[in-house]
Amino acid sequence: MRFEELQAKLRDPDQWVRVEALRILAMVEETRAIRDIEWVFKNDPEPGVRQIAQWAGRIVFAALKQQNRPQADANAPRAVEEAFLNSLIDKDHRTYEAMQNQMMQHELRDAVRSSMNDQRELPPPSPLPVSPPPEISRKSSLDPWELLDAGLSSDFFEGMHNA
Image (tube, rainbow, N blue to C red; front, side, top):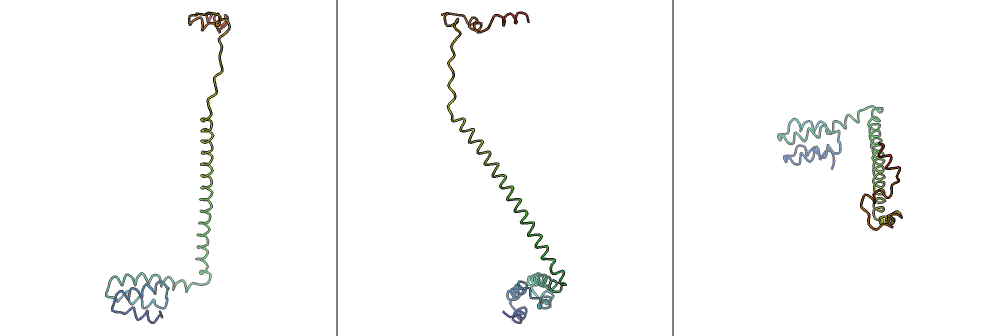
């Protein structure tokens, strides 16, 4: 669609045609339309169309300012964009490293749990057979105090009496 056709649509009786023309002019940042958009903003009978004209005017005006900047300033947005992209890349690297650390922690935790489970699955060691001291095995009936005393030496009891 040519610029002249869009200009004509800004004065169309149908408000939706005017809105569509404003939308197209804003999206293509048609700087030649700044005066026409301003006219619609000031003179259109519909408040909704005036709001769309204000929105379109801001976009087109920003594009016009961008065109009129000296060449040194034209590189400024690129520097800002590049800094922004670099910050995103750095953030991605930090996020990746954090995720790697978390994965390693999970793997280590799982390995520890697995080894603990492996130890639990092993049968308990069989108890070693304990045979009573020889003097007890020869006696057939002893009271419990004699069984307790059978494994202790006489100097143990002497030390207890002295204490």
